[in-house]
Length: 292
Image (cartoon, one colour):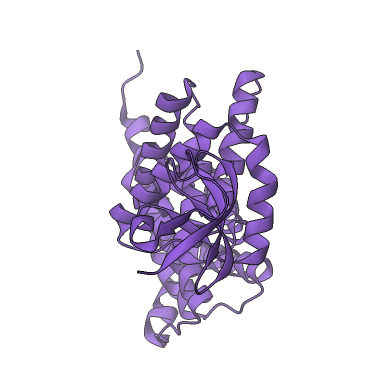
């Protein structure tokens, strides 16, 4: 039966071990290091609820992090990662062990020092990544329970981006960039229409979802079927919203450095026209209300 050999115990939940296939690895698991000694052998079959860091760079970063972090946090993060894998049915990029542990450790420190950090893209993140957001809600709730903290809702948004990053194998900076970009695009729409879109409305959800899919199509290099008849109709019937849609696609091109297909302008115009109509309807209702 294949096994790993303990090289060094870092704490109760983390060891360095020799692996028959990956040479030296960092192994993370609840109680994996408890009462272990150098050269102890551990059956690989027992590692099914543990995580092995295979990348040399990830190993070095994690080993630097371990002494700075509460051992209980390492245990709860492992539990959260396992929950995410089981709930999503997907493997995660191993960097999440470092990124999530480091982020939560820093968040707890801010909490203890009563330093508040506002997440300006919380609503965008929730709309863009609803499944990951639900997993992040579980994670923050579990951390609060295990660590005796009350981390704010803003942290759910930050944790959700780490989960998106690990599930999609995209760097957290790219994931965050997309959330920031969508927040900025929504702001441009609101400024142009002089209309604040209610964050809990279907209109807001539709707009954010559409913008997200535009970015996802660009990231995957998907083509969008040209519809010249629709393009002509949108340009003729809704020139102001068509112009705004064109402006938004230019901002997207500048930020992600990928050309946007012209057809995207037409589809975006439809969403913008719906918002413009909603604003007009609301203003009409307000005018019709009798003065007190």
